[in-house]
Structures are given as structure tokens and as C-alpha cells.
Image 1: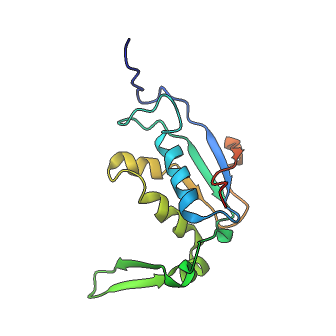
Image 2 (image 1 turned 90 degrees about the vertical axis):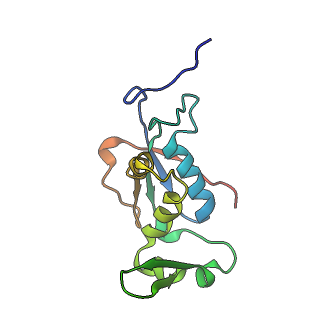
Length: 145
């Protein structure tokens, strides 16, 4: 019995469409990260990008549990002394796509392969997206409420 190891380009990558309306951020991000890595397939190979493309729409309607809209802080360093911080509610008002993108990014491998996986994630605040030519399949993720 031989172990199957996928090679680059041998796995056909599908396009999936996910509606993020009323979905919880962490639960949705973990399922998206699994799909981007390819762990949902029996042909998963750790050193090869076997995942699918994911298009997420309606990210402005995403949810947090508890008081995270006010208590959760996003921090970054600008190059000047001190860190900049912003609350989740303020980030939702300015760049709602960044909330889900950052949550998924932190769940992927921290190397070149992880950056290639993150490039397959397409996140849009509204219900419109420019990927209709790829015919993404509508998919339900994060069904726990």
C-alpha cells in the first residue's frame, strides 16, 4: 500500500461562495481556513496547496458573541512609538472585510504556502462580487448559532 501525495496542479480547485450574514466570526473563519488548506479533502497533502477558492459576501452583517464589539481591540505598529488600536465596532464601520480576513490569516500556516492560501480568499462587504465567471458554488458554513 502506497501513501498518496498530491503534486502541484494535480488537484482541481473549486470556487465556493459563502454568505456571511449572521455568521459568528471565529466559527466561520475556522471553516474557511480548513477549506483554504484543503483539509476537507481526502487527498490533503501538507506541503501542497490542495485547497479551494472561497468567495465571502455580506461581511458587513457578520457577528461576534458577547461584548466583543466593544471589548475586542485590533492593534498594529506604525513605525512610530506606540501601537495603534481600534475596537471591533470601529473596524466594522471602516473596513469590515479586514475582520474576517485577519481571523482567517491567523489560522493559516505562517509561511509562503500560507500566503498563497490566503490569496485564494476573496472577501466583499456587500452582496456583489466580480467572480461570476468562475461560477462559485453556494455553500453553507458555520451553521452553529
